[in-house]
Length: 77
Length: 146
Image (tube, rainbow over all chains, first blue to last red; front, side):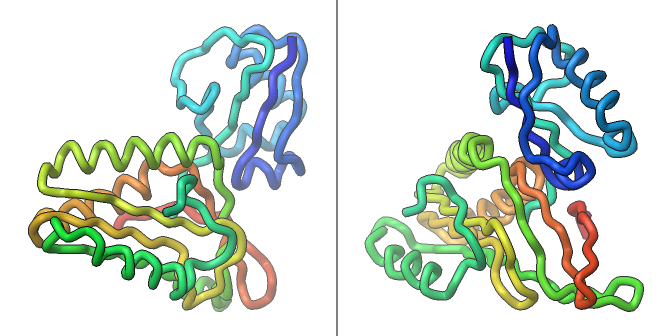
């Protein structure tokens, strides 16, 4: 299975990417660890996670084709 | 008029004019309230903001902006319509990055609903801004309620 991960705001800058695909990640918690392992600087910033356009607070299982976004605090307007 | 709420670059006076022209077609409205958000040339540590670069999670902006409209129309029963236009990309200081137009039967609800819509936009829309200074350095900014 493969999931698409989007990086926004300062997280796109510190990872130098807007989008990456990850294979064989069981849950959003696993994904978070995988990303923080790959990009240690990410853990210096606060961010929330959305799964398929919905903000989530809990660790959720991932399915093939899911879209996850890492989002720093919003700053529109 | 815009189904995805986002435009690239500043919200121009031409775009705003289109909304103003459209207002006259809503003959059941007696009050329209408008909020215009402009990029401010803040001075931070001796450097002046010359522009803001906005990025947005487009798919989620559509979902969240739809929810904001529904919430406003549900809370303010006299309100007829809510329009939101937000910039992505570069917007220079003095240019407009957010336009909100709320039309209601009467003025009080138009004003209150517009104010509430702006607060929800700031809180709920997945948009980020990078302040670009006159020396081309930059800083990511968070919204602070003043």
